[in-house]
Length: 193
Image 1 (tube, rainbow, N blue to C red):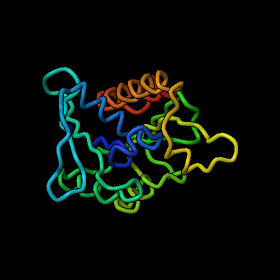
Image 2: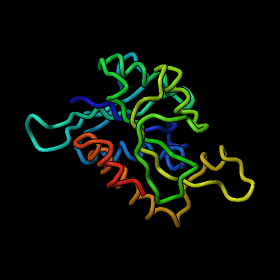
Image 3: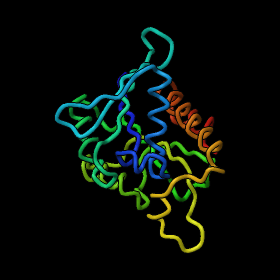
Image 4: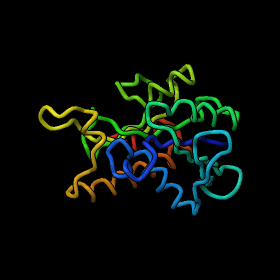
């Protein structure tokens, strides 16, 4: 089966270490595991990498890993373009993103649901006309004190959180690989913390 796995983030080195870019980190890890490199897709503001997951043969799953080359709030256009290009239904889409309402070092996998104020998810819903796709939600926690959530998300992870971040990126990549080879219920049982 073919899956589109989209990591949410903002393009460019300025945003690379931001909390809002944790989705990019996970698809980068999946590409690294599969020995693949990202390359631009002609006519779509995205770059993709192609990997296979699982034992060789009939049950092997093909993942098209994707990162938008648009900003977070315009992600829907590239995602919709890739869905059309590969002739996929939303049931073959996995979106990896940061989540303010989940504590750091926590992970949740789910199908569908609301956008919870996340501009990337809102943009995807507008473009696809549905929110019924898989999500791997990586907890970044709430901002301290009265810090604006947008400022918090557009700031780097502190050095003290680097080890935990690396572990969560690995776990999120593991969750994606597990999900495409199993079902949602087993994946939630294994990875939802």
